[in-house]
Amino acid sequence: MPSMKRPAGTELETTPVKKAKSVGVSWTKGPLPLDAKLKRTEVTSNASYMDKRSDQCDGLTVRESLTLQFKNASGEKVAYKKSDLRYDLQAKRLELVPAVPMKVSCSLVKVKHTSAAASLASGVPLHNGVLMPVVGFGTYKLSKSEVIKPLVNALKMGYRLIDTAQVYENEQGVGEAIRQSGVAREDVFIETKVWRSSHGYERTIKACKQSLRKLGVNYLDLYVIHWPGPKTGWPLKRGQVCPPDWTPAMRDKGTWRAMEELYEQGLVKAIGVTNYSLRHLKQLLKTCKIKPMVNQVEFHPRLVQQEMLDFCQKHGIALQAYASLGSGDAKQAEDFFAFPPVQQAAKAHKATGAQVLLKWAMQKGCHVIPKSVRPERMMENANVFGFKLSSSEMKALDGLHTGTRYAWKGVDPDTVQ
Image 1 (cartoon, rainbow, N blue to C red):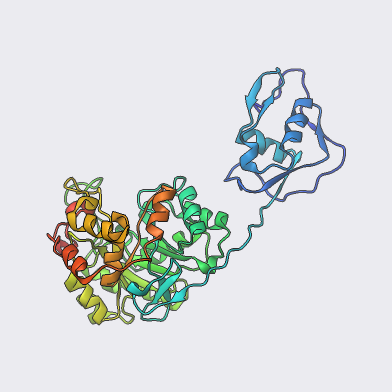
Image 2 (cartoon, one colour):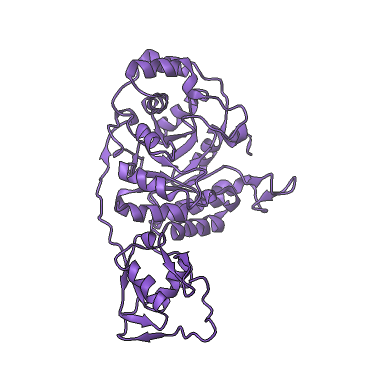
């Protein structure tokens, strides 16, 4: 129906032959559950075309119904839109039957070291005993609508760690994908991050609760600080920072104190940091009540942060690598797959360049979170367990180190006071 306005001389009020069971929800706005089925009721309309279009929706999912066409009052064939469906639901000609997804159970399997991971279900215990999957699925640069389909595919393939963030603005989509996948909440490891403009005790508490609401969950598996400093640069004016009351002391005395409280309250199962330099970590360890369980940093053959890795391992902090396959955030980004040591190892093990790069990081002791929206690449990244790089191959990949940063436009987080 193109318009909800009543045409002159036509009565569109519904005439209930039998009162339909109320769905108890107003569908005039808000998201429609796409996998819910539609059931035709016995409520009829004086406009026969409305009955006909409701009839054809019977037994279909919301998603399927929105691909239909119907003949309107003028006899024109038009698309059945969300506004039409909402109108039919409000008039109670149709009812929603919520989808009850089959729960897919996949408990994590404990391994001692990232190099021992044998599947996507392999997890290494953090220093508080929580198992964190070695290989996860990244969602950077995927909008809340773009993230749903690839994430549902990833979960069905067996990925169990999902990495998102407040600033990605896709947490709502991540939550929807988890629900659509049928994988039980307790079998998914959700990691999200508090953005740098939310530094401070009260702002961090608020940001965490907002993330929980958007994700539609009552706890997070891992909550991390996204950046050791405040928001600077565009769209802010030169010299301004966000939050405006930022001081370096806020990082540990405000933001981290909030992280500890969220952990003690059980809202998060583990806490950590992202992009912390050795200096930032050492400062935090001097004052924290609960030391971080994870530090997520840029780590790849061009940036082998060996000193950082050694420090984290010494202090029981898991190092989670991002940009393992390269990053397009910097103009000087390179094709990691073209590096001769990568190609040689790939040929020797009948693997792909991506698999070699991920395996190298895992053998060094890192967790990894590759991202792709293409099912074949997602499967490729998931099949990284059937081979082992030799010591000479590992050394050759280490030799690619130049100290070059690609993420964050090449900014070294150690420059943050």
